Length: 169
Image (cartoon, rainbow, N blue to C red; front, side, top):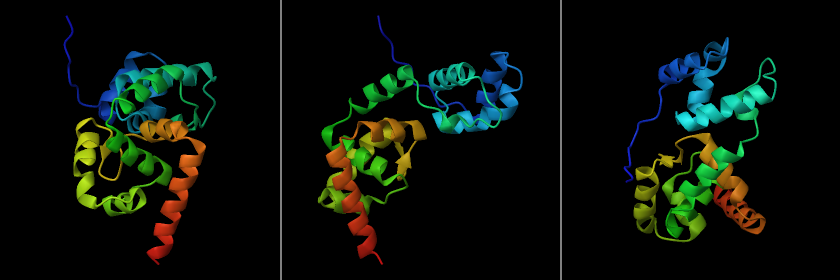
């Protein structure tokens, strides 16, 4: 028997409490807010990032976002992303390549589709917790997706985004 349980992301305070239970001295003080924001409050991602930070020797000043992503985290993210419809995945790819908040009209121009055709892909991305407005609900999603975008496609999307930026001036 399988049951799906929808959980809300951990807040910074919840992440701090979770980190405190790991009994790693100073962990909750130094990185709870960064880990909560960087991982979107996903407890699995928090645990994996802490394990990775400990394996890296936890240098002073280490920022969780500077670490390479662990394979278990990447795998979970890939599974979420590749369960999306092709149209939603296309939108997510444009946002990942842009590396910043992207307005719907910009995505529509880059994908060469009318903005109304993106209503359902955006709804899907938001309902699956992938996008929150014009950016990913947490940075790990964008980073893993960016790694997955084939080189030629990435270059083409970068060029389309640059053309749009020039036309806005």
